[in-house]
Image 1: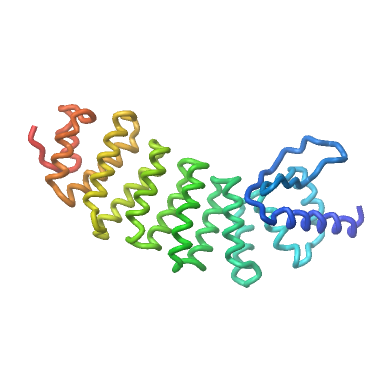
Image 2: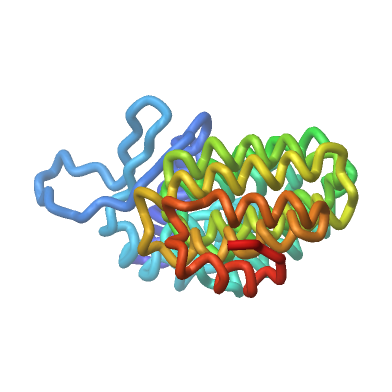
Length: 290
């Protein structure tokens, strides 16, 4: 192929990709299995887009020609759709955002699109957090909606430490007014994922923030979570994350009301055998009469 035909093939592919991404809410990279003349490199069905992996060697072949400035963004976007964990690609996007060539809303759309296909992509999460911190840190509405995005991603991939760290960032940005609502949201999520260690670690840290900031009803909020985890331990007694959460919550309850913590340990006869109760009491430094 001549340089001209290569450039035309590249430009045509990028333009088609740009058109297909309009109103696209999900995509996937599909294995190339069809050798017929009817084969489509890009296939759009409603809001869904399929990208054949045969486009990768085609992109490499045509990338020998330098894309025009108009096509540079879509070329970078294609690379991120295929390989989102390359920091260099995201750094290029950041430079273009900072220069005003890409609007921040476009990055929120792109990162959410990628996370639906690659929910474990930490680089994508880091870029989204950068966009939020740089352009939306004072928008409580945007920050609150981001918590809903976190729920969606957490459902798709468990034990996503980068995601929970991002969630902590969002809650800290909003401040104590978000704590109680976030606790309720997390209760709902953990009811569907009762043994997710990342979720319980996050809940423990959120309760610590709640007590530290003296949020109204903090004692009741801690006691409610203690009651809930004690019920779960009857079904999942082998889950270390539940015991670790109970220890943290008991320490917080003791800090708020020593007598309540003492009564709780003494009354948990089903999950704490009589010989274990003095050990539990010692762990949280409460006084229990047996």
